[in-house]
Length: 407
Image 1 (spheres, one colour):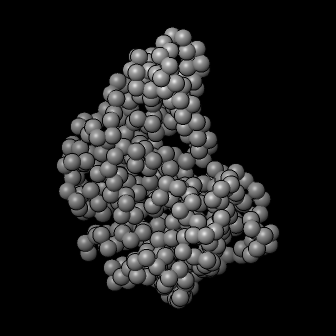
Image 2: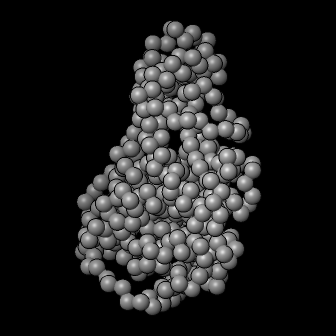
Image 3: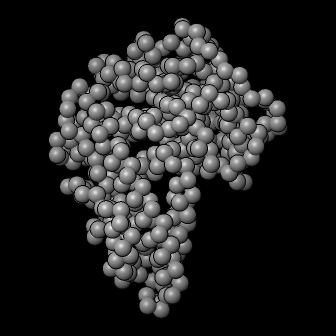
């Protein structure tokens, strides 16, 4: 899979932008604040329906405008696709594939990318929410149907929390809340599928993480990961570090264990007005040489582990996808790495179909990743150097009847 052309309208600091992309490495160069990251952020949105920088879609719309449009011509499995999304400030977002309307949540079915950015250091050192988000984005990339399951679970969770808060405020006893039983069942059914899917994903990632860590760090520090699920009795708090791994919960035991957990914490939930068990309270436990990476890993080891998680994700998608390699995006990563890790990372991504790199200093990026350079200044493409090795250009869908009526 690769992006042939990226078109932006009123996205971040771009009034408009048209960027031709090559097979293999593409390097976006410009001083900080010029718009390099905005380009790759737009592609990340197509793949995950979110930004690695902000949680609010409106932040991606240019100031003073009501909507932004991201349009990408993609070559996937030897066919061309025109993928479009309109991000609206005060209306539901809209999406199209080859000019046909689809639900925005279906976009990840058509475009797959793995992005690594400095913010990803929080996967190792940050709070559980970031690691859950990492797993869930990869789940959807691996199986787009799960986007609906995750969305339905979030809706049930909100409804259940509203009911629990209402019961706490009015003093209603749990055994008199028949409605709560209905939400309990939906929480368990949907949550059990998410937990089981995460467990299978982690098992697929484990061997890849170990290999990827060694490839970028040059050392075998026995990098490993496992899930920690709240339904087994541990109420994970945001500031409560995990000190030991848990064995995976067998798939057949997930739903009954979940139902028992919901019954066990009912009194506590009514007192606090919040749902205390489920995949929204789980975590991903990372360890190096048998010790928790969070709190024990050095800065360099943490960087290597974060890189390993993303490289392992790419390896899993590459192995399982029928649409080809995911697009690899490295956003301001090389400035954070020493020379040895830069070279090792370049080796690790060199054979992917397409790699997109942003850098403020061109010399930070290994020369073999600078085959196609795009220079950016103040939200404008000021120069695009042709690839040093000619790349075939596939035909693209007709530019007529776009999502906004333009080209």
